[in-house]
Length: 334
Image 1 (cartoon, rainbow, N blue to C red):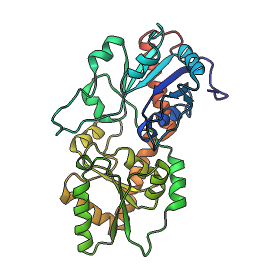
Image 2: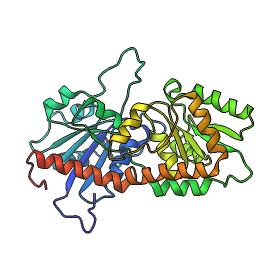
Image 3: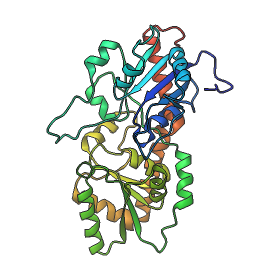
Image 4: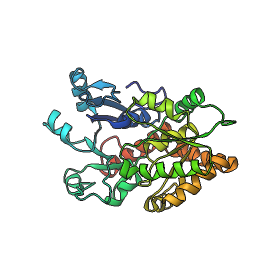
């Protein structure tokens, strides 16, 4: 938690707790926070229940004494998804000047038979928690939800692409897809579309990425030219990684498109396709029209650098926390 040379000693100190961390999202948020001036972030993780992602700064059990010190001295206590870990490990509760942050990541498909509340507003309001959502989608469920874009280390991903990607001259167009939840992702439709394009003679191959470590998944994705993310919720983690690498990213969801246009992004940043027919047209054009491909890849990469790169997310995070602390009259808030 060493402060940058020009960081004032009054910087906000945040302590983040989590257990399961899919895709290293929590670790990335913590890392992004430490790339921007305004505060200092510490991150502790409990357990080892994700075989694909196990990054942490401190181990909640092995480094318990350090974690307790970080918890007591923090200005901000940041939990992810729910309060179970906080309640279990720190039952004594929060100090009077702790700012509590609850960070939402999940979603429920609209066709689900049972839909639990995505955002627990009554609970959050009762304990005064700041609400942060990883997707614009989460703002649908709370008027006070802050959008904090999923962080991606853009230059690191560009370096991975430079190592594994080969120029397209003389080879087939490679399309990546991660079928983590086939019905939600639109995987069956994608397989149909790619097969149909191949029959038509379009030089395109589908590269499925699944059941791999995060590092191996990234290396395989980097060999591709574009990524189809999902018909639902627009561009998500897989697509953001691809965009950071310099690929075009295809995704759908008219509701998310409208939310992007109404947000400070001001536009749909990815290549939009919301139906099987649209997906077929877009993929064919990306595979055969070099100018269209270059334009689509460039604009989604620019979006990811402006909104999802570590310094951009870090600066947004500290701005949210300082504004919330100031609104509550906490000492040291600016």
